Length: 545
Image 1 (spheres, rainbow, N blue to C red):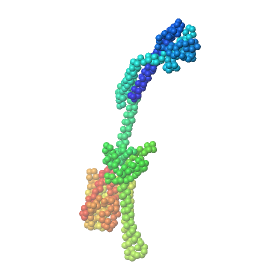
Image 2 (cartoon, rainbow, N blue to C red):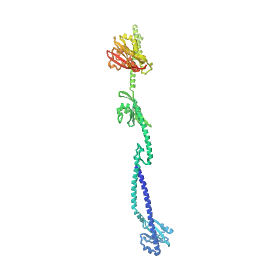
Image 3 (tube, rainbow, N blue to C red):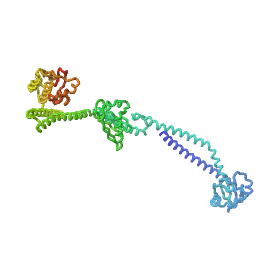
Image 4 (cartoon, rainbow, N blue to C red):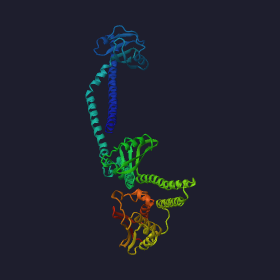
């Protein structure tokens, strides 16, 4: 901008100076030309007077640097101081003017001399014409005496350049020194006041927009950081623009000052998204299962980046695995009694069973059918618990009285197994579903009887604590090996499959206990020593009925 201002100022000054110089030299030239013609006129009058007195003899004796020509009224040359013989001069401009007006003048190139001359012609009283001429170079030579003026012009032009440079810097300096953060504090000339006002308005508007942008960015970061899913946004070049806390936890390299995505699987998904494709995949990270979703980011139809989302699908994966295991176990458990029933029935239908064995086969069929019914009932109970099916309203339940009812119902079974049942402790009331609690205690006591040994015992103890009620079922049975204690609450898991098959368990009793405890917010613990016995404890928090 400084150069432009300097150029414009200097150009205006130079043009003005050149215009003045042209006018000056033009006037000076015209003045010199008028002076030259005046001198020719004076000498022409003098020569005309001399000719009228003495004729050609006067001209021959006249000493002058100028060329003198004398001719009659029809243009015939009577005398010329330079050339002896000249053609008729009547058609020349100055002669025509002299004949018509008494005098005439012109500037032209002389045919006889080959130079440009000034001509002045004067008509005498008797009609003759006297013409004087001189080279025009004499006038130009007079202009050469004006060289000091030219130096003055050069000096003025130089000063104009310096002043233009200074003016340009002074004009631009306030603009260069503007404080864009606080333009109202800048000292400027009045012509810049509208600019300063506009800059102040733009700064305030920009500050408001930046504040709004920062607030939105803060809200966006807060929102993404609160997500349990990993979130990552990349531009077209692969530069990371945003990564939430979960993503930084999954990939520590995203937490640095210059975050960069280096995981091959994630990079491949991002590249696919930047190519315009939606990509989904699963991966294992930090001991959990994640579903990676990569999608392109488009702006006006053009892909400008990609967004990656990691969703924790560990529970879904585990549920799917459990579902598959459950389906396989159910198929196996249902197939076993059905196979037995089908085999016995087929033998009886073919008449291959002796009459004395029919009762025995019928009892076997009845036993397997009862086992099948019990298995189906337990499966239905677990399904309801898994699906959070509506349960009866909770009510005050005395675990001591409930345990006594359970033990009373198992007295005959225990006597058959030669197992002694006992109840200890005190009354302990909680808020719960009586039917489900009864099923839980029944399963614990039933298992304690089944896996006991002849002459053994099962003791149910209920104890009231300040913040909970503790119910424990202890037996003196075969116990559970340490390697199996963490899995006994899994569905269909059996420690000793041969023993379980012999006593007819479904493998779902402890699973029902575990789910029932979860619905009552109860804690379950197990303590067992092989060949000494097992104790399973349920601790129910006290709640308002």
